[in-house]
Length: 327
Image (cartoon, rainbow, N blue to C red):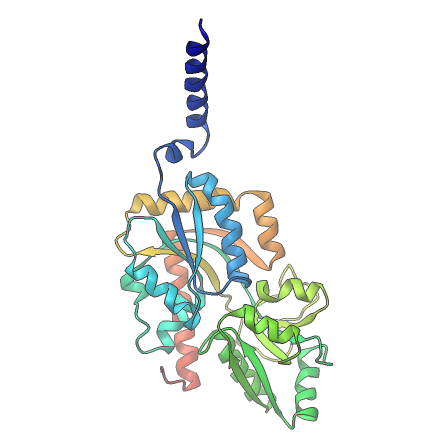
């Protein structure tokens, strides 16, 4: 066998080995990258979750998964981009409850209709929103915070929220009513800029998801004072629920899911859902997501659709009862 023949055989063997690897066939066929839209800026909890999953999904899908941040309007811009995308399985939207369930209830013309323009792909977690206090706030818990606002601010205080007309905003309003305070929700363009102001003691309190706060809580830079849910969260067993802190009515937990443009083939949806299920089964991924404050559980498309409808119905009643008028 001459050197040229040897090289040719080795090249063929190498190509065969590559095709045998998971996802390698798709890569060899030039599989298109998958865009994973995120409606919030880099540095926040949702962005961190998306990047973790994207890194692992590329191996299961056999194609690059690129996180694309389209921040603004509580995820509205990303949702509009999803609606405009081709329904070919190459553009997906990773979102929590706010954009898909809450925005259509509080915005007259959001530029999309989830029931008409999107199809559920898979859910992967529920999570709890939380009330957090900045490091410069002397209060340790919610009751102490209310007393501090009464004593130092004359009953007036500002509370950061990651988006206007969101679950955090309604929570702030309920806390104000129950405590007899004038608490003003201050909307930000996502949790990352809100966190910057909290860490800089520019604002005394904020409401957001546990993944937004948990690392700085553990580092002692801020304090999570209370969490949503019917029971304490596994990642924060020392933190009381809002019900325990005297603010009942927030037992229903938000969700995280992935959505595709309407008309996306069922085979594409099933393939992504199956890939996500495999990623979530990895101990490293489950541990990291749990550490971030998520309750990890894979939900196939039909289960996510049922969860989204039930959650939307619950919040439609809460928002209507609050007297809020869609803007």
